[in-house]
Length: 56
Image (cartoon, rainbow, N blue to C red; front, side, top):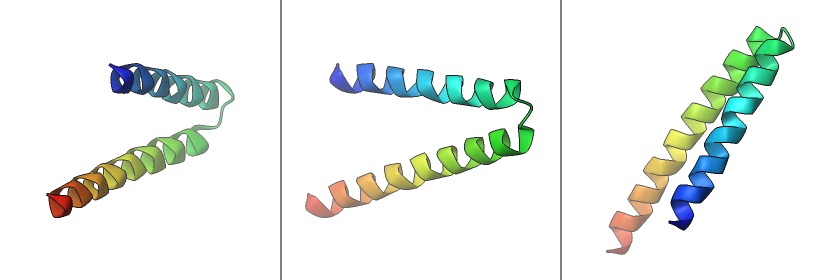
């Protein structure tokens, strides 16, 4: 349950940050934020899976 609550807050923050950048007429920053956040999250997920697999 703790992970679900944390990820819910993280997703909300992600949505607010993205929307705020768009409202401030900074589409380039918004797309950079979207791309870097998404890629970073995926890389960290793959790293976590790799560590978990090597530990078991």
